[in-house]
Image (cartoon, rainbow over all chains, first blue to last red; front, side, top):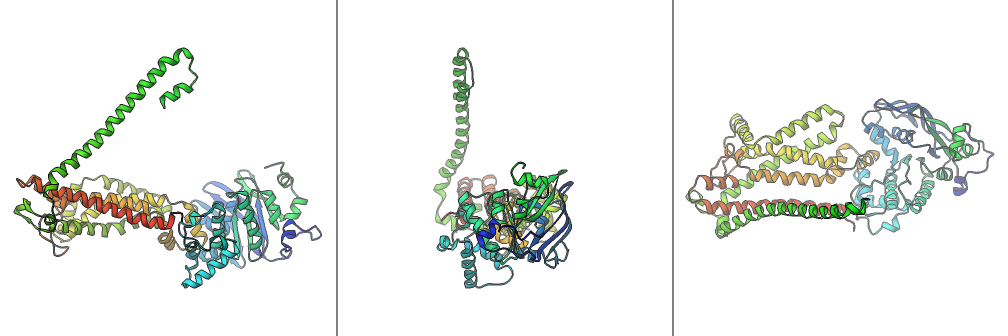
Length: 278
Length: 301
């Protein structure tokens, strides 16, 4: 996945003044991935490399397997009855699909944000502390410190500092989604998978989360599924375009966002990105 | 409703008048029938409670609650019977709550992959829930009293009741767990939280309403039970000194007073009144505990 470096800076570069190294190592390398639900194929022969430190956007019509792809990366697909995964997925030097892989540890390193904000029915503080205190006992003050830190990072601290013990379900949709992101950040993930994180939010909240994604990419590799092409263009370094072929999702094309928007290799990509199809 | 439908449908002016009258007539009749049914239900309830209050209240006193029965219960109180009832209930819930919750967890969370096992367990629970209590009584007598050698005792009675209450408890708790959005399960899994911790910290608390419904139904069935206890806990009206003593439950006392003891009627009414209040007390306690607990997590503050 190399991009011609003489092109004008991408929107993301202009906004943040940063871009991942062109020769950044792979954070996750997927090869010949197939996903089936029972008899139905969801993804066929997908190979994709996610660059370290980059924001990769995954676009394509509904039902083309973007979410299925995401769920295989942290093995959340294990939870879906009848889901079968073939192919190779490597997260740095580990084999994600290997039997001996510590799935819980993997999921702490590869965090996930869902389309619908899903805070637990407990207080804001407990939402963040629940996963934190899983591995080792933390004192109250240690937890408070982390809670403040991650809420600062998602820009919720000033809004919520007096309401840490209030139920997380009382927050607005945008706040809930940012809390979910904070909850994942508390585990200091290396990769963050986001499955349409803005689609259940109003435009203002959506913009806030979008800015947040840009900031997060400083600390971790981000993969974001989105239906919003403008958003993909604004925030992503790399783009992967999925399509449905013979009732199964396939990866049509991937590369740097800038290159794909400017000069797509496939007709389908060109039509989809320009809004003619899809 | 019926009237509104006639007016909005495009009926010609010629036919509208008689139809409308017909609809109005139908409306009135339906309302009358429904009202009558409601009155019948409320009436029966009021009759029972009124009757109980009328005959029972004059017999009620502090002494009735703290004294032992005299002359087969014609006079005196029900203190030993209250103690036995609570002891039997405690054994029953102490055994059935943990068992029921674990079985419900197995059905809804852990056995999701083994569809056949779940189906078999669920089918047998439904059958068990429909078995008449006298059959449980005979089983309890044969198994707990005789085979396990526990004799006529509070332990035997409580365990038999636990068998009876389990199906109700399990199905209600399972429903509660099923109604927990899978979002929570996915969120917990994605955070690398272990299954055990997810169950304890997220799923069970969220399923609490279902658990409480099961508990309330279970308490109701256990406290009201007579037939199953005749053969298992016996009917000795003394204060039990251990769980291996025989003890008479309140409902059994009521049965005995009204069927076997001539002139025991007033005390039977008074005991029934106490039983009713006990049940109300236990149920409102269960509800208020869960309410308080839930409002801490859910209510907007």
